[in-house]
Amino acid sequence: MIIGIVGGGQLARMMALAGIPLGMRFIFLDPAEDACAAPLGEHLCGHYDNTELLSTMADKADVVTYEFENVPESAITFLADKVDVYPAAQALATARDRIHEKRVFQDLGISTVPFAPVGSFDELQDAVRSIGLPAILKTRTMGYDGKGQFVLRHSDDLESAWNQLGDAPLILEGFANFRREISVISVRGRDGEMRFYPLSENHHRDGILHTAHSLPDDPEQSQAEDYARRIMEKLDYVGVMALELFDTGDKLLANEMAPRVHNSGHWTIEGAVTSQFENHLRAVLGLPLGSTKAKGYATMVNLIGTIPDTSQLLSEAGIHLHSYSKKPYPGRKVGHATVWSASKPTRQKFALNL
Ligand code: AMP
Image 1: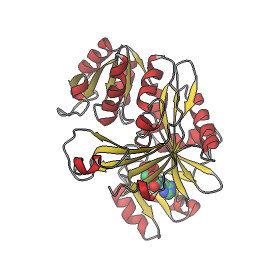
Image 2: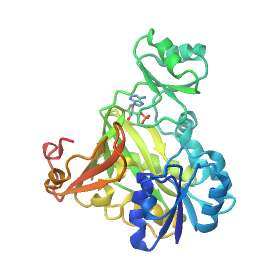
Image 3: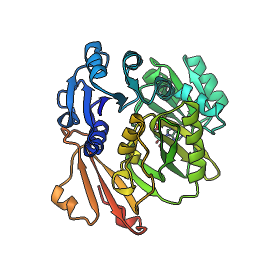
């Protein structure tokens, strides 16, 4: 089986690391010469809309998937004419536009923060009048790791927010007073079977995910699964999907979905019977899904900017280091470490100081 992946970053690399033991082979399309998945398969080096390279991928691969949602729509349409692509274009189109995504959530009866599309300064003023402050102004597309966002606290903030973001189509969101941020990683096979991993509790630093704890037996599990189930059924979804949620204490608000394997699910490599990466491959290839049950307790910490001293890291009991072999620079995710334990850990023990 040959799997084509649009994108050759760490998510593609970890998919390949999961699929190679199952006899799968990989082709990656990525413009970076040093794409970190490249050593694990064939690397088509070029832009995502390069039709010659897309044709090569479609000819060679049995199925194509992607590792990020900002793949040009034209690339997916081009590929889908020639080869099976999962998750399908409908999921990608939903996830890449925050307004479209939140309308899908609303139509499915899934709670969200109040929101409004913003296309002009007048619309921004109207939206602030109806939603109130604080609020967050975000770009509708291409946002990631907290980029393209501006928190509005006072009415004087509107002008600078508009000057900074006003060139792009925007969404104004009401500010959620959440108790914690969680996500549910789910998988749906080609035959419609769905499985759900235990929730992750996520902590961010400077808008970037820093730590994710697995939460076996969390009381919000069934509500989160119900939301994810509705979305996957509606989109006839195939593959792994992540749904990020704000837990306000009395309900879960859906923030955003990712039509792909997700950083808050990296702990599943050591902390679940089948990792999110293997289950994504199983799903897109039409193979039986693996168990999503937790094995013990896991905490994942992103290594951002640089990999700390390896000997010191590996001296920590139960630690698993994943270095992506990426050139370090500030703010770049260059690896992650997962600490695993059989019994419920105390949070101090998992502080990890990273
Ligand atoms: P996002 O790109 O939507 O995942 O936002 C990045 C982070 O900003 C989230 O993980 C939250 O910590 C915070 N955030 C985003 N939207 C809201 C909101 N409507 N209310 C409060 N915090 C938010």
